[in-house]
Length: 278
View 1 (cartoon, helix red, strand yellow):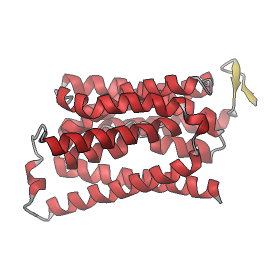
View 2 (cartoon, rainbow, N blue to C red; view 1 turned 120 degrees about the vertical axis):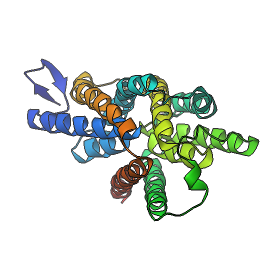
View 3 (cartoon, rainbow, N blue to C red; view 1 turned 180 degrees about the vertical axis):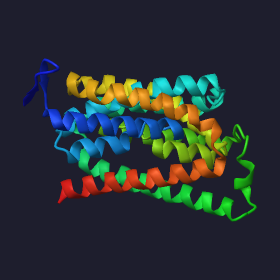
């Protein structure tokens, strides 16, 4: 363990690495606020690749994801992009599962779960990219009904969305993520929600789920305060700025940005998990 004299308390980080992570966290927070994600799926592998121990990285990352979502969620709430039915259907199962995943994280095969999460995120990123391409090409199918839609809540869609959200919550809590990057396409494709509304509601769900997952992690690993400050403050500021831009972007462009960022996040997670297993 090294020290950052300017901060006055111990950290896993040398000063140059703290500065690099601060800049990365601001950029990731801004992109996440724009598309309704905390993007811990980009922040966690970045921390691991830069040498932060996994238990410390996971505990800090899930709390930062929650803190980041607060500022972004506030803006989305003001602009009417957080819908109560979505929070109830998708959020409640995720809240319970997030705590349970964090609580049992010490017993979970974390690297194997990171691989699984990477595959899911990569697949969803490609799916959203293809959806944006179809819409740009003038394809006329059910995707054209997304603009302005607040959801289609048939019994089949409700059950499927709730069960999938619980499973994702367990996976996310165990590895220190909120996995909004997988939950977001679920909201868009299964419940047929406008991506801008899905972005706001998803970020709000991630805010609560991340806090509960962090509480579960506290039973196994205390949070490193230096890491939390260095990553949390710029991420919160960036998320608020990004959320202000969401309503100014077309549905198709937002889908394209979501697809690109999720594909990159999935690739990073998959690479980290596979290299750790080999």
